[in-house]
Image 1 (cartoon, one colour):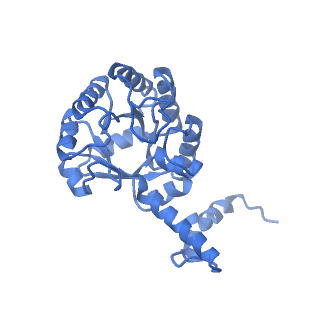
Image 2 (tube, rainbow, N blue to C red):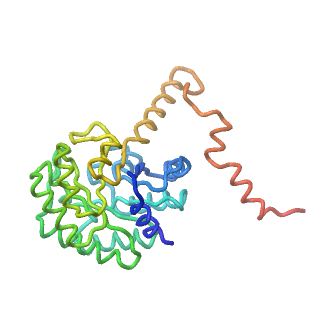
Image 3 (cartoon, rainbow, N blue to C red):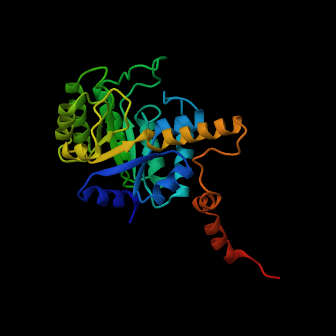
Length: 287
């Protein structure tokens, strides 16, 4: 059963799906080890880890694809939704992006409607004209046929245009065959309900990490509103940064480690030293 088929089956099950955001081999391995079946390879997390900076469309397709290969290599059974951003160009670029992720083993890929390159400001998310976006999503859906990878279509137009335009785009994405729908930055629960209705029975995705200017329901409330998937881009990233800051502060104070470190045995177990030794035994030569 392929990764896309397994994700389709998971989406058909009842209940709300919590999708941790991952960015490298270790974060993916930890998510899988914690029992999660699926994860979102988040562009914001990849930008933070690779660039040490914000997610402002500076990460290239090559860097994202390399991160996916790390994620997939460390946790091959994890059903990964890969962040395809804006597709890294025109409709043909989108198709190439979708096909590459599909061949590499991703279960789904996100394509959004933001203009690229973005204006030289961290504020706002100007979006392409609707019909230009239609062609990108059409290209993505056609490109997905080879591997069966699911296409998640996202609109970022709510902050710069209005909810009516955002809902119209979701309806258009459904017409073009997108599998999962994503309204970014809903202002309130009423807007979430409108987006879910526009998805016409297909799964709706939401970012539920706190801090951004958007409606952020709890997991139980998200399910009540009709959302199917919730991801948390800062869920692991922020504690990881806090832990590294604590470790550096301890070193600066003359200590060997911070108070919240793993015991050495647990660290070795988490990293898989014993698993390595067990697998390596078949290749040991005896003299």
